[in-house]
Length: 177
Image (cartoon, rainbow, N blue to C red; front, side, top):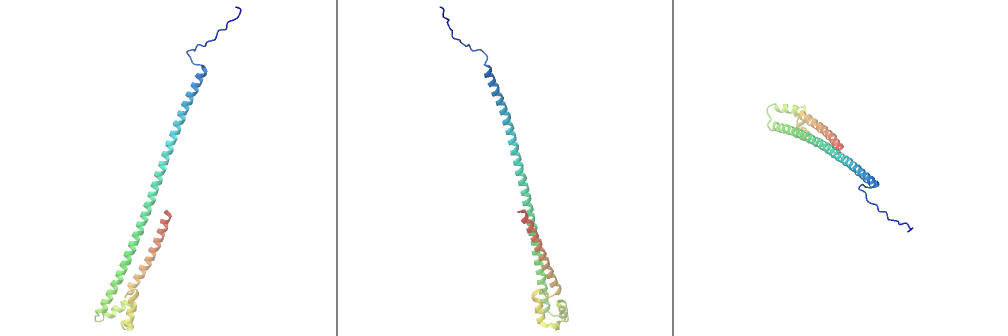
């Protein structure tokens, strides 16, 4: 028996894990913790971005509403100016009509010596000098009295001024668009 007997080696598992398995478990745990921290930071940053976008959208909506309100106010001022201008034109037309009616009534009902006073007020000339043709020529355009004719020309000047104001307002409205 001189031969040696080789017995197989049996490794009996120990109760503790191998040191390499412990190292892998520790690295995995650290990786998991770092991923959780990174995910939390990304989540928080995304929430801040969404809040900033909502705030920006609210600010844009507020400024748009302010601009629309300013445009509506300008339109209201334009409409008010147009209404005032129309009222002034209507008032001037009514005065001209009233002056025409008064002149027609004065011509229809002449009194002793009052005809000369009407003629003096209408043109500053004597009644017999022009005759009927002179009175008809004056009644066509501006009215029978010089004061009414001057008033009518002032209304046309104020209408031209109103037109310039409307152009300026239109230019301002065009800037908002």
